[in-house]
Length: 133
Image 1 (cartoon, rainbow, N blue to C red):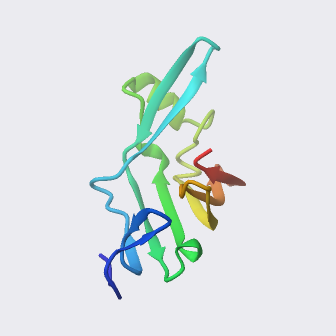
Image 2 (image 1 turned 135 degrees about the vertical axis):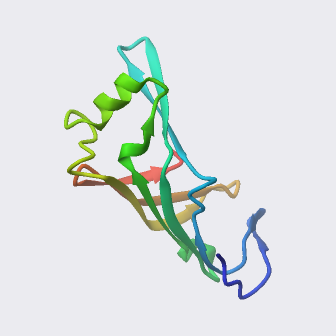
């Protein structure tokens, strides 16, 4: 729940929430993915259990995002594939039950779109990623 210090405002044409800390609502939030499969197809899925927080600061470009994904909540609408994805071959959910994203910076594109850079950790390996990309 937010603890707003001010009303929402506009920044580079984007309506932003009030300054404060916001919890990501796990009941209304999920994250989707799509991966290439055997060069001709695509597998789509989602993670159903996510949590985290977003801190909006006076300067929106100094705001931060922390996002946690329960890797066991993977759902591709194919139970056998989901079991395989949870196995040590892929996510290894017994050893690595979470995937995390922690922002390291925010910038804007000329048209006002936000670009978030951060560290994505999956299976104990952390790599810097940029969203959207």
